[in-house]
Image (cartoon, rainbow, N blue to C red):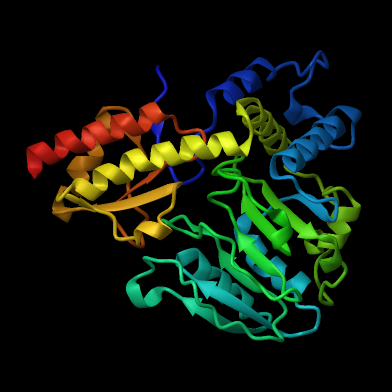
Length: 359
């Protein structure tokens, strides 16, 4: 069976080259006679895999030496609690920017640990833009925002400026590694792996050294960033195979030319889809043009009763996982790094054909 075009928001499409290499190494990784899944996480073989993955990620993002790279578990959702546990430092208050469903979930979780102030929100216009004016408290422990909202397709294309003493925290799950990123502008960046990095089960956290060692009393050991950093993310058995696949993805990106090159490709793919949406009277993307996500493109049909026919027709042509999130409906095409330009071209061609037939 030939490969399909998988537009899933996550777990998402992986590079074919990565899957092929993992397949070749499934039964025997580099002459060890073992699959990576069978290796001890304390053995020299896996330790070398983990070290290489960290080095390659640091290279790709130019991570400063003053930041720890953690390979954790629990998804970005666990970070909603882990961040206030570690970063409040006795202040008891944190500021959040709300731009969609994931921001709202982060706020709800943080409210169990501290006084949460919503510094900005785009809910007034249905989460269709990225607010540029933030009302941040001067004595807040940190400011949290979701730099790309997977469901609504809203992306911050510039890093918000913070006062020097206020750490900026970003949930970058659905666009990390899609473009260059100045890590030094953040106190902490976190991302679930299952969109642009690798399989579900792995979470990447980049945290500045000075934010370590401030975990609240009662924080579980595996959720204490300082303890995880001291143990090289191995206080318990890590997601070894997911880390291995992530390492292969990092090498794939480096071989392409790094993040500047993948950004060019992502801009071209997004432009193809948005240009068609903008000239169509049949489809609509409600997000402000300047805040549109390059990774997640939601849109609606002129007649919502045609959604099912549209999705079934796409599936017959080998384009799957285009259904919009259950909270908003419609259609959503996630066009992460591993989605080819051919996949986007085929989607646009199908959209044109469907519009001609039903428009």
